Length: 313
Image 1 (cartoon, rainbow, N blue to C red):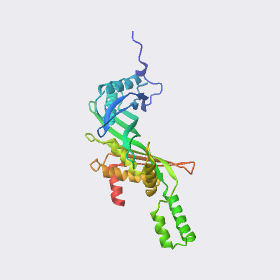
Image 2 (cartoon, rainbow, N blue to C red):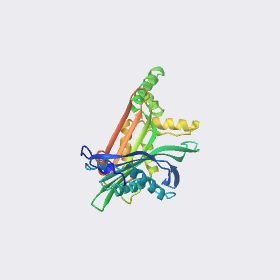
Image 3 (cartoon, one colour):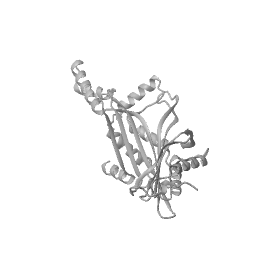
Image 4 (cartoon, rainbow, N blue to C red):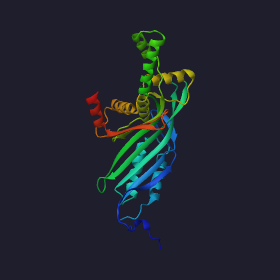
């Protein structure tokens, strides 16, 4: 006699639960997602389904079984992480017959080849890659899927406000101490690099990907890097270090500026992305002269982003 399955019994309090699942599933996979660069990563999967009021609990082993089986089927094949999440999400609905929606998110640290900015020496840089998929029942036999791909990249932002105050002080000192005319002092202060306080910054962008549409994650990395004052590098020789600092000081940005530049860069990079696709942006600046950090966030559709940029550009 088989033991009764408590999961299928009626709960004491018959209330539905929106998301129930398993987090921290780690499975090694191999795929290509950065142009022709092959990478091996170990993503962490978080997998959820919804639970009706008539069901006491989910069958959590099904979450893990489906993940391991699908990843094993893709061993040594080349694919995109968001497509893998989509397949796992669809399989969750097939195995959890009581669920109407399944969500799968994968997060992985990825290391990719790069070159130093001035000396052009080969190096390796890292970013965090996040993929997400939501599968939902469109009808009794049809399943729909939405999927997203995103990255988080570290960089530098230089404070525009502090830099402008220092520039004013430089102008005043050139005029008073060196008997220089105000026009000449202003010209010199505008031409030489003026310091500011720097922040270690973390920019994130996540883009919804429509069916049959591919987004190169490396392009998202480039978008985030270009949206900050400067990127950061694991390896820097002295000319590279000077170049990074000079670049950052020449492009001072508030945390809000980074979000706006990310939005514009995504619109420019993916003009064919449908207007109803969701975009998510986040920028966090770790302050060096304050004890607090600054954060900016924005979630909108591609159409809304295009409209704002066209209207206010």
